[in-house]
Length: 441
Image 1 (cartoon, rainbow, N blue to C red):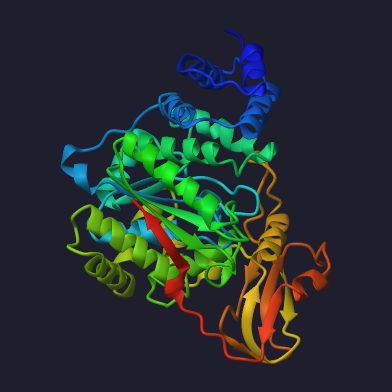
Image 2 (cartoon, rainbow, N blue to C red; image 1 turned 90 degrees about the vertical axis):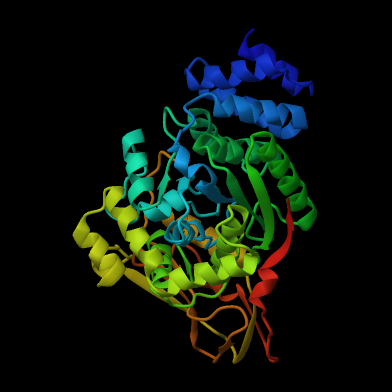
């Protein structure tokens, strides 16, 4: 068997068998396949597709390319996680993990970096000085014992195939192919050895899935493959037509997450954290109903119990105590570096904000951060703040967007940003409950 034979076979639209898929995955991890050939295979898969059987085999091969984590048997039904397909301002995982831990669950989260315009959880957390996303197994055990949660990266030993494919998908514009998304996410969740999983499938302009039908197809396949891996899974389809919360950008989003865990209400973020957290509490038996689970999450966000678990997680993952104190209980500007320059984008008229072009905001923030591949240094200090968001009233010449940038001038026209908002003369009724389109189990 040789990689060129497999390339030709998939290029011609033929189905790969289990041994061929294992050969491709294992030899990718072992360094026996050239980078150009890995990219070519991903492109062939993207163009010719994978069957459901091939997707399952690919997911299993990616899982078994590295270690599968094992945990204290007493935690068996307490092991949960959530994963998103990514969106602009999507910061849900960061406050959700410690909120669940504060409710008595264990959250061993293997997360990802930014792909295309969608921000990555790891990139956000690495804006906190000293935060270490690469931990040893004893470190992971300590995190779950002490904080109840951790958020880490794939490594050479943990989901190594996904670590390689993740970068190559970004470089070959194959990020949005459904079957590759399935393999990437579910292999990580299976490697965590969790029992219950929530999937957040983003739908809309600021997501990889632009329409409900494609999102539904992805969700169904992810749930099916996840169940085959022995993970009880529920997938939510959620709207991604405007930035989530009031920030986009790594350090800025961390600031907002901490504010949420300090008891502040953050639109859209509060709703999704509450719903996903409540669902996992119900699925694991910690709560009798979804509503009682949501109530538990709201309580730990309000009484600082989630913040306490977040603080412990920071300490356990290498952040110095002084930085933790400033971030969680003191002056956040002493813990987070924010870009030196700010540019305000003003409203052209008085009215209610009806629409914000999430694609424009996401693209601008992506360019400011300098994200191209995992090998590039990310400027964590840049991004955008939305003093006003969907459904809120705004006056003419009042700032609705503040861009944080590291160079004295923006490298793109303000006209683009000024045209990213639509203001209505009539009051807009925005119901945050409409973030949820449907769910699949």
